[in-house]
Length: 333
Image 1 (cartoon, helix red, strand yellow):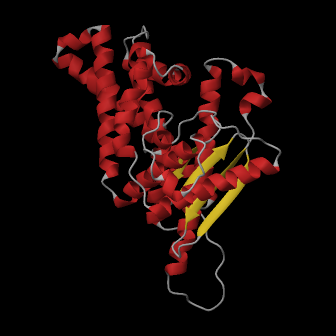
Image 2: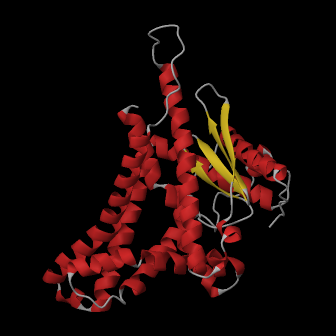
Image 3: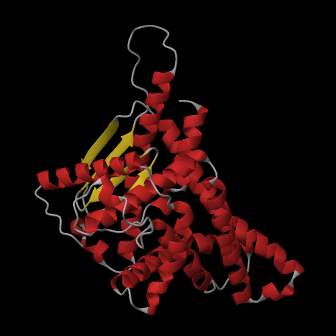
């Protein structure tokens, strides 16, 4: 496996929470490398555009955690469990798209012989290394670095010695880092194309939810901004972390860092419930919590080309076909 393929996989892994809503829905999805993953209640399909123009797909059944274990229907718990399953599913889908890209790169290389080469894919050790590095990277970027910077600022500007002022600045720095990282990766051609597939996923979901025949022409008429997007979820998560972190009674750097990491499941669970509540009451003031995420989707979603919308439709068709084969019945939301 080339260093370029590993780097692409790593960068795309960092974007998974932004591209995945982490919510049990009738129909949802996620952009992957040169493709889209779509999921129905009990199945999912990944569709990826290959270098030769064909579309590679992979379909699998998908069990809902809330149907298997009653505990995952409880408030707070259901948010953590659902997001965890969504990340696992998104990671598997991203791995499939990466393996398709590796095969395309291998096919483009000069052949040493006419003998068919073995199928190439990302090795297990690379998957493990990428996952571990991603976890460390995210903790360092969004937990350690903001806390470290505010701790230094506190020594220069005593105003940040106050408990609330400290945590507000900590949250502001975290959001600034997130926005800077997002804007930076959006300048890369590879990520711009992924954001186009993200837009294609949103358009096709809107098309389906509107009850209209799902076609490229129909899908292209819809917006790319969707309230259930992971971008909205992450923005709520970061804002909600400010008052939650303010509850930490410790003053030491290490104790604050450990508590911030330990409270992450609580923050995720509360954010999920808030987004869920706001989605069911679009006219309420709480619906405003999704507004920053919708604004940010001007970066994370881009208008797709027709062939990209075609890939998203193929993923939806694959998920729905498998859903029907399992006896499932989809209802328009």
